[in-house]
Amino acid sequence: MAGLDELLNQIPTQEIAAKLGADEGEVNSAVQQLVPLLVGGLQHNAEDPDTAAGIENDAADHAASGLLDGGVTVDQVNQDQGADAIAKIFGGNDSGQVASALAGGGAGNSELIQKLLPILAPIVLAYIGKQLTGGGGAASTPAASGGGLGDVLGNILGGALSNSGGSGNAGNSGDNPLGSILGSVLGGGGNQGAGGVLGSVLGGLFGNKK
Image: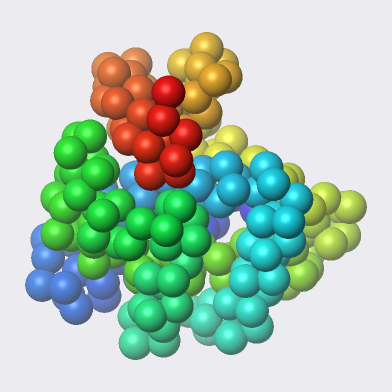
């Protein structure tokens, strides 16, 4: 089954840290936050059927590139495509704008986030594409079980919430699912406020300001 842990295992955190000249612990922490964020953004966009079809096509293309075959290396990642993906996910905002907004909401180092987003987006999309096309494993893939994009994204986000022990928090924020995801990823109840702030920030990026 598609899951957050399996997706995170595809990401060469140590190599990314070395390439960026950043602390590995800081990179790992940022990756743990940004990957569920990217999946949550895709899920938000997938609520529109036409956009969902576009996500499926992009994911299939990234999967077909062979990015996940034999383990990901940073040099394999097309960061230009990653930057394009970030703009699609976040309402036309580029990596710098998204990073600034997230850092302003308490998500961490803006410069590091800006560098990580175009690296992570192709890996996330390739993983989703593998799940959709039946390349992610055995009979648990959506192609075999009759699932689709919504199921794949839901399974990954379910892992994000359960891994943080935040299922109780998530259930109380149906009007702001991204806030729930972020509240859990940022540490459950203790940082629920931060999750709510970041959820509002993301709502602004998506053009859904309240």
